[in-house]
Structure formats: C-alpha cells, structure tokens
Length: 188
Image: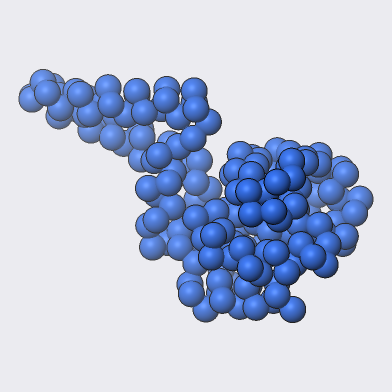
C-alpha cells in the first residue's frame, strides 16, 4: 500500500498535462466547475471504477480532486488500499480557483449547489424547523439538538453523514451513461 501524496495548486498547474485528473465530487458539483480535462467519478462510485483507475494509473499519475481536499484525500486512501497510487490536490477546486487557475464549465449544463452549501441548507432548515415546531410541541426541539450534535461530530471526525445522505439524491447522481463513458475513456 502506497502513501498518498499531495500537491498545492501551483504545483499541479505547472504539470497538469502529466496527470489523469479525477474529480470525486457529485456530478452537479463537477458541472459547476472542474479542472480542465478532469474526469468525474463520484466518491461513492469509486469502488466501481477501480479497474479503470488501475489502468489509468499504469499510464501516469492520478490527481484526485474535490472541492476542499477532504473527499480527494479519502479517495487516495481508498486507492492506496487497492495498490493504486494517487495524489490529491490540497484545497481542491476552491484553492485552485482562488489562485486564479481556470475552471472548466460545460455549456448548457444545469449546475447544482456545492455539497457544502447543500449541507448548510439542510442542517439550517432542520434546526429552524425543530425550534419553530418546538414552540408548540417541546419534544421537537430535540431535532435541533440532534442536528447540532451531528455537526459537532462531523467537525470532530472530518466526516459528514448528511453530505453522504444528500449525495444519494437524484440530482447528485451521475447518469449511468456518463459514468460508463468515463470508465471506458480511462481504460483506453
């Protein structure tokens, strides 16, 4: 098992053509802007893509990308367990764009809010719901407490159960034809 490495955006930009870039965000997030030449394989579909990623890694270095670097680091760890070497982009597309590098946005594609924004909307809505219903029915305030506890746990463990649940919604799922085409492209 190899140890995942990390690159800062300037290092990745200097040699972008040397990498096979894999964006592990949801299809909606990917459509909102991704590194030039990136292939979209959502993190929860990574196990399906292992044979294609192994073939791509045999031809060159894989650069795993997400919004902030957390999911791509998780992807690198999963790939390392399968003996597939990969590198992560520190800070993800947020740092990439923050340093002035170009993000590719496909034409005529409806974009979806980034996962972090979806989580904030869902968590905030549930807290407000728990508090407002709690004015009439006191046990409903436990919903707000549960969401608050979940957010603290999420921060402490650097995981997010709500993001994992939201990623399963239809607008965050790849169309089978898109994922199949990506996997075929990586194996060639």
